[in-house]
Amino acid sequence: MLTSANLASILPFPDIDPIAVSLGPLSIHWYGLAYVAGILLGWFYARRLVDNGRLWLNDTAPMTRQHLDDFILWVAFGIVLGGRIGYILFYDLDPVLANPIRAIQVWNGGMSFHGGLIGTTIAMFLFARRNRIPVWSLFDIVAAVAPIGLFFGRIANFINGELWGRVSDVPWAMVFCSPHVIAAHNGVCPAGPDPRHPSQLYEAGIEGIILFLVLFALTRWALALKKPGTVSGIFVIGYAFSRIFVEFFRQPDEQLGYLLGTNWLTMGMVLSLPMVAIGLWAVIRARQAAARQTA
Image (cartoon, rainbow, N blue to C red):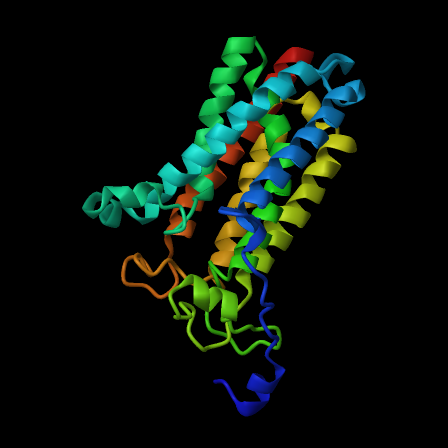
């Protein structure tokens, strides 16, 4: 229960303009910059991994910097198209069927990580086949850098005052209302006046920073890239558990709410559960393949 003491300790939500730069009629949003920063920094880190031959099987990377330079456009399309189509299919299908123009209104709901993952996976399959690159090694490269994009994306969600958490009385709870948020929603604060978990920051910390460090240790110290499929499998498992955990603090999408009449099961959990099985299969397959090579 919220008390006057709880209310007095609530952290203020920072009033940050979602528009980072305005150049005449052109507006550049923090959300868009987050995607650009995630892709470019991920590309830079991926090039460093490729340059370090000792990390790879036979001390030779199975791809070149040029491959990564060419792949950046493929992955950008995979993330954006997959993310938007995934959001429509998983979270917003009925409104889009009723009003098809809503499909291109990215401010109505935005993107889905699970859709972006599917789109990126398709892009990786096609690019690897076209360029004769071992697909599992390409999976591993992208998995190792993906937490960078997740971190920036969740920070952008926080700046936009979207995907907020459930109502809470924890000392770091926030009221996700600010002049910019209210202005962006026609004078209404969609999160309401109640203090909530800053679940976007939880996700940025777990899916972004912690998962990146785990994968960094696997690639640099455990030399997991020598067993193609290990890093991508651990990434999928790590993201799935991180997302399921944070879903207990995150408010479900309004149009879906809780599933199956419960007060805890969400679409994010449902979409993440199969990822655990897929990730485990990838890790087991990688170990079996490595064992066959050394037999």
